[in-house]
Each structure stands twice: as C-alpha cells, then as structure tokens.
Length: 138
Image (cartoon, rainbow, N blue to C red; front, side, top):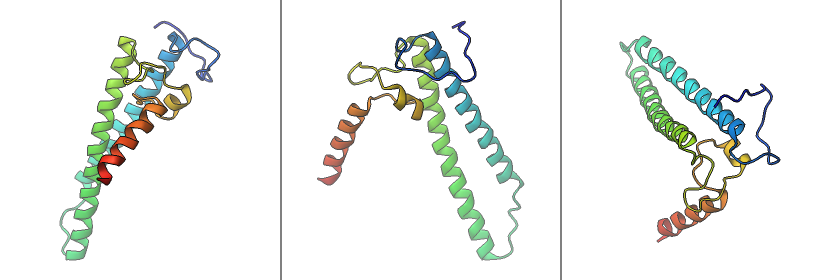
C-alpha cells in the first residue's frame, strides 16, 4: 500500500469501496487506536505499581482494592479490544476488511468510521441482537 493520504482525508461513498486509500486510512486509524490503548495500559500499570498498598485504614484499603479491581477489569476489556483490532488489521491485509461476515455485503463507511472493528453490517448486527434478545427473554 504505497498510497499517500492527505491528513484531512476521509473515506467517501464517491470512491470505490475499500480501495487502497480507504484500506490505508482504516489501517492507520486502527493502529493509532491500538497505540492509544497500549499507552493507557502502560499508564495504568505504572499507576498500580506506584500506588502504596500500605493502607492502615480499612476503608482506604477497601477503596484501593475496589479501584484496582475496576482498573484490572478495564485492562481485560482493553486486551480483548486489542485482539479485535489485530483481527481487523489482518482482514485489511487479506482483503476481507469492510465486508459483512454474515452477508458478504460492504459495511457502510459511516459504521466503519464509528466502529472500525465492525465485522457485521448494521442490518446483520441488528438481526444478531434481536436473536440474542429472544434467547435472553426465554
């Protein structure tokens, strides 16, 4: 992908879907997102390591443990998000990025812009959520 992108480039419906520019744009967007998550994770780890665990007061200790548990849960969610970003980057490389896993149809650029790790079109996602709701309600 040797296509250069202008800093103000945004994918448009007026160009061929998932052309080199669009793939390069979404690849950069995903890599930036991943780097931001990794940076935040490093900061969280530093914070957890720096925090003094010697809280003589039980309430302070309980509060600290609660904060730590919340941060660790957030890190687990971030780890899963990074796996989804890596999967999206693989799809860019193999040419399947931007296409619905269920229907094979293009996922709208607006959806990919809002959620670059999307694997389903809005319609397929809504069907999936309706099926989940039906099973949850049983």
